Image (tube, rainbow, N blue to C red; front, top):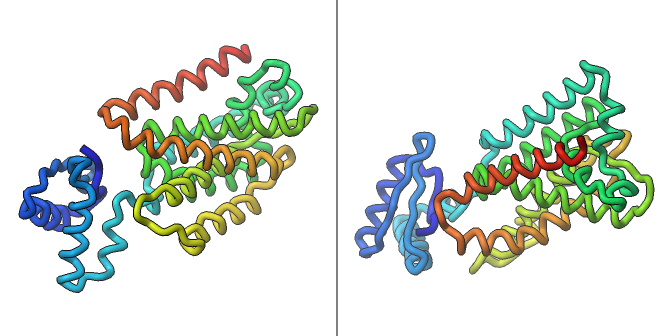
Length: 285
């Protein structure tokens, strides 16, 4: 079964279940943090949306149409995103406290020269390093603006996994572009990848016309994040390649995510995320 609506309060969930049941549509309900997710069979998705929309139109609840989107992408409440933000802060604070900041950057930063010589682990480890407090704060804000909605959209395991993969790809493409001793660090590549993933989600929505004004908040947020995430070793091309990597990955990810519906995919993706990070650290040792 596929998600029809998520994060609904109990009364609204009861009403929608009543509407669908009256049309002989099979439903399943899952509770999550005192809210409810409603699932229906893939073959009933279109009919379900039509029935619910028709009900609210007939009852003149026009504003609820926007509140009952299939998958909302505006929620900033994401515990995995908060954990990532905390991890970035801990790493930066530890580097400063133990006075190994410059050493860590030289050893784990995204050096185009060393990446092309085989030290590809740097494309992963560089995502967790920041030049100063301003750089870190800007990227933490970006994680809240882009990372949290994407993780809420895709899942607690698949979200961080895709951010890591797309951010790593962005750093690899950046290294290929420079082909020199260029050195960059920061989670902004992954955050811009999250922006690209959100744009990809808007692009591939079935039955929805893509409008420029629907993408303007994402682009505006990207510009704002870029303004506040400047640092000594940040660069615009890393942001661009991160965005493009996220967009390209999203075009592939979202259709596949709908096809593969087994319940453990988030747990598997989260395990792979930790495995990639651990493998990168071992490769650098």
